[in-house]
Image 1: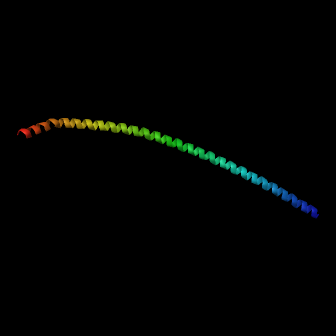
Image 2: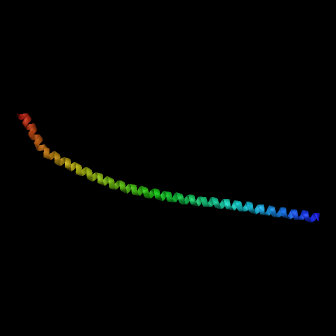
Length: 103
């Protein structure tokens, strides 16, 4: 009977060792899968961030071009207005200078 008890304990220990070995192997497999999943998630997030950044840059560049064109038009319009004002006052200024010089 003692031998049966010893054999039963030995079988239980062997089963426990096998279960422990299987659990360790499963833990390693799960850890490796988690690492691979994390790398894939990170790569996807990096790709999305780059695409969003590229889209923002393109949008900003287009907006900048629109603003530059608008400012250029405003500048041309302001310059023309100043030329018109100066031309309108030029003759009066000439008359004033002549009057000051002559009389």
